[in-house]
Image (cartoon, rainbow, N blue to C red):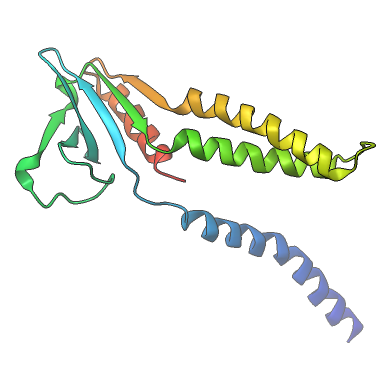
Length: 172
């Protein structure tokens, strides 16, 4: 009987990391949401700006109106498809990146400052300083990730890299 209880205890300990991993995976997929991606497409003939609404295996779809990525367009005349064979480069601006980076940097800075509170002034002072430094770190990260340019040069390999990056951009 004790052997069975010990075996069940070991199984429950071994299952905890797996359950934790599945819980984190489930929570992280809940953060996937449609985002507004302002896009500039440079073709050999012209430069066009709009909002990225969808991608296919070989093309992107731009809308004149502000739409979320992967959102169906009600007015079919308000969009245009661009094949990768006609695209030189694409610039994408993800809205809200700077604000989100500043908030994350501030929270992380406050937490680090509070945990590392070996100051004469107490944990509040270190948390304050950590928050202020987190604002600047978040601002730098936000400015770096604000605008992404992809050089397609009419090649399918470069277009596939764009698609992968766009999917990563739309997570959180």
